[in-house]
Image 1 (cartoon, rainbow, N blue to C red):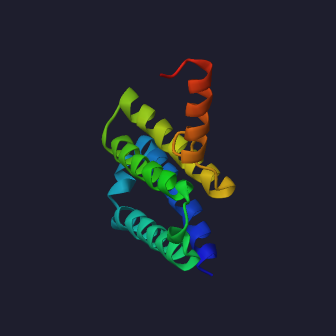
Image 2: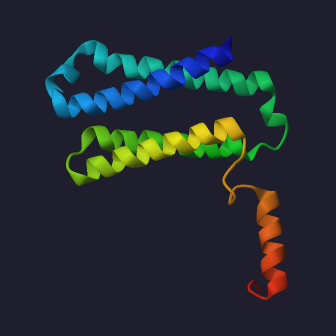
Length: 139
């Protein structure tokens, strides 16, 4: 049940972000509506709490799961880029929006594959270091 709630709020949060970004260009006055100011915080809080519940319920912290660390770091980046995208204007705003969408896509990919970035995976890092050391590229 928690997983269904989490998945539902993942898509709701994304739609909310993209919708508010679009409204900020098409009709910025609508964003002053109290519901549109409060709803994203409620949605994201439920999303975060359901994610924490899934981690606690699945006992993910007892094993080595670097993909959770990567998702958390990307989540922080997504939040920062989202704030910049909603508050600034011009080219920086669009760049921040694209970076936020990219972070979201990476989070989504990691959630599905349970495969972290290569530079966060300690096993792959050791293999790469071993290969570079044997080839003489890494001293």
